Length: 271
Image (cartoon, helix red, strand yellow):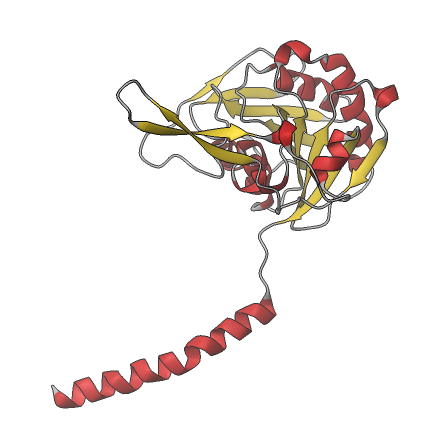
């Protein structure tokens, strides 16, 4: 099995090293990551500056590893189209320091790596850890949790057009309550702007992460299940095309198109 790894914390992040060590038990591992942290860049790609790809030898046992001065989506795109001779069998993005929940789908570079793989019809998994302080992470315990999840995933087949978003609690495996498959809770507004005054009276706004202050969460929320000590797995279908909705919206514009044609003929006859 050929496995491609990316992340958004940078190729030197301990999380990607831990992920690589777990995945090497299951197949040939290739690594293409940003050369530095690219958190919260979403699914952006680099258009106006050239990308530099540098081979690195920091992971023992991998089939190839490269650092790119671009985004996670750049890394996956380069891996798929340039660096790997054939498409990988699966992609893993992570392990991200800090959880990716709910609306993070639209902001996270970690999830964007998985989305980019999905555009190539390559099964993908994004992996994040519920901890922001690297000093509080014991990656040996994290790898034990992740190994169990990866083993199950690779014994099965991710449905076409779907990628999995996994969040791991930062606890020993014996304290983990199990695995909960839950939807991303898009109703939760995790980040809020906070206004601060500078010495000259100018107001600036910073985003504050209120993850630890969230209360009254839905009982099936990915936020709540992770907080309770579960590994959360959220299947995400992307991209989605709704045929019925397309037909409905097409009807909105059908009359408009006829009017364009009519007005065009009238304008031509009066010319």
